[in-house]
Image (cartoon, rainbow, N blue to C red; front, side):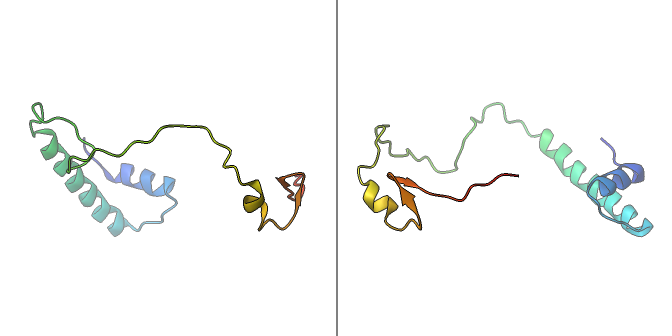
Length: 95
């Protein structure tokens, strides 16, 4: 894929960035260099490499997924500025 000045100008417009003519030329060269590096990476054979989520093999500890209400509503509501019938009271928001 090739990047030209028109593409750079469009990207700058979409990003709401004002670029001078010299800056557009510099960005065109930068984008072309980045795409060149990506093309080099595409040439690497990764067929025998399994996908991974981390470079370190880690098994995360699991816990039982249980639904619980917490069992301490008084403690939860203790710092609430206003409360009523065991619930937080918040101001009404209507737009």
